[in-house]
Image (cartoon, rainbow, N blue to C red):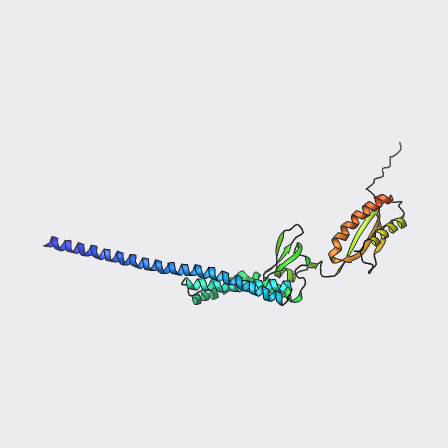
Length: 288
C-alpha cells in the first residue's frame, strides 16, 4: 500500500515537472518570438528611416540651392538637419525595442551634469559654427591659416570646419577654436601684395638692375599698375646688395606671379650679365 502511494507521488511529481518545463519553454518561445518581431521591426525602421533621411536631405539641398544661399550656410544647415533626423530615428528604434523613451529621457536628465561636461567642447564648437556663419571671417573656398592648419575651406559643419591642404590632405578644425582665436584669411581681399628680395653682387649698376626689373614687371599683365609697383635698395648685406621689389596682383594670381617672377628674374639677370652673389670670406695672411 505504501509502495503504491510512493509510486503515485513520484508519477505526479514527474508530471508536474514536465508541465513546468513545458510552460517555461512555451514562455521562452513566446518571448523569443516577440523579441524577434521587435528586432526585425527595428531593423526595418532603421532601413526605411535611413532612406527617408537621404530623401529629405536631397530635397533640402535642392531647396537651399534654389534659394542661392552661401555654400557655408548650406553645409551648416544640412549637417544640423542630418544630426536631428538621425536622433529622431534613434529614439524611434529605441522605443520599438521596448525601452521606454520617458525612462530613457529621465536617465539622460539625471546624468545631465556629466553629459554636459562631456559635451561642453561640442557645444562650444556648435556656438563657434554659428559665430562663423554670422560674422563670416571666412567662407567655403577661402584659403585660411588658423590653429596651426592651413588650407582651402571645403565645408563648415556644425562642430568643425573641413580644410583641404595644397597636398590634398583633409584637416578637421574645431569651430570653437577657429571662432575664438586668430585666423589669417588669404582670400578675403581682392588684391594681395607680393614681395621679393633679389640680391646682386657689389659693383653692379643699381640703375641697370632697376631698369631690368621694371621691364620684367611691365611685361606681366597680371601685375597691377595701381597701386604702383615699388623697387628700392633694401639693404647692403655682407655679400650682396639687396633689391626689394613689391607689386600688387589679384588674389587668385598671387602664387603664379610669385613663382613666375623668380624664374624670369633668374633667367633675365643671367642674360643681362647681372651677377648673383654668394657668401664670401676674405682671409688676410699675416706677414712674418
